[in-house]
Image 1 (cartoon, helix red, strand yellow):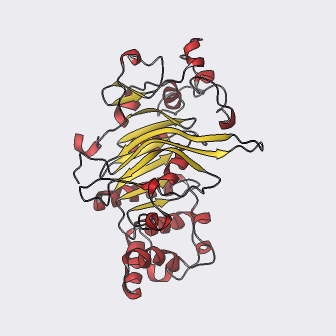
Image 2 (cartoon, rainbow, N blue to C red):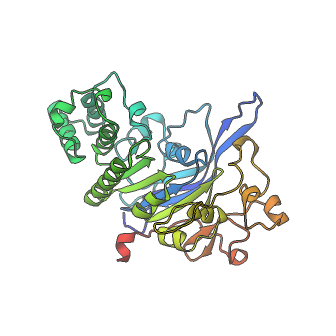
Image 3 (cartoon, helix red, strand yellow):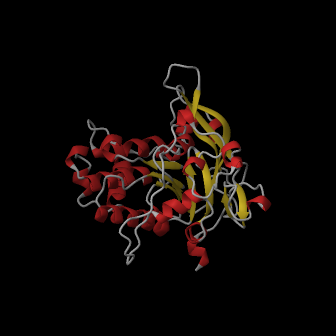
Length: 356
């Protein structure tokens, strides 16, 4: 497989859950999401809570309980085990087949390490499980692999830590254990779902630096889910901005941060504090995130949009995600050049390291 082909390609993914009002209605948590992750690339998925970031990532490993969840349509193409052949649609795999992918070819770091780690099993037992399952190694060799994994993520005295229970470790240490578990089997893709949530700023920086170091050493790809644009600017190559279950802007970090096209992206960037800026108040996006059970008609962002200018088209028709500029996609009727935009699938092999 060459770098010109994506490692992971999500194509028109839609995921729904039953409404909580007792009716037969389905609520779409994700609606038509398309994105790609290339070898050694970091793709950041950004958006407010409830926009569909985590559901997209969990769908990649078929971790959405079905029922109540349901994959309405779309494909998730995986090329990590194809050796140049045809990619595999992960959504078509059986439970037995997807288990060969989880933790082995694709691994995931979850938001809350305290709730992700089982409190009744030692750290060693939990790290050894995927190693014994996927690598079929003798137990002695698996223990050494676990020790090496803990050492690699910066945990001192790893032999002793293998015998510890999760509650004995700090939040930062538990997150390092989660990273060690995820990377023990040398995956090609790491799904990092807000890996620094609930950690203090110093520990956040250490965890992100650790992920960058391991990515560089192993050549793996990362799909980074976050709501922190500062984390995106420092760590990502490509960014997908999500709102109300859809991708509303997609492009390289440089393009999206320097020339944002969607008013939601502009609002997010304007709300960030800037060093040396003497403003007394930061900009805010008016209104509230719409309830998934009652999205507005047309563009879901139009009730909060500063650019819509009472355009009836915004309230009536949902804009498609189009390539407005070269390799820069947006879903907004008022994006400059949108009327002449091309209908192409978001797909960008850009990596910052290749541009220097």
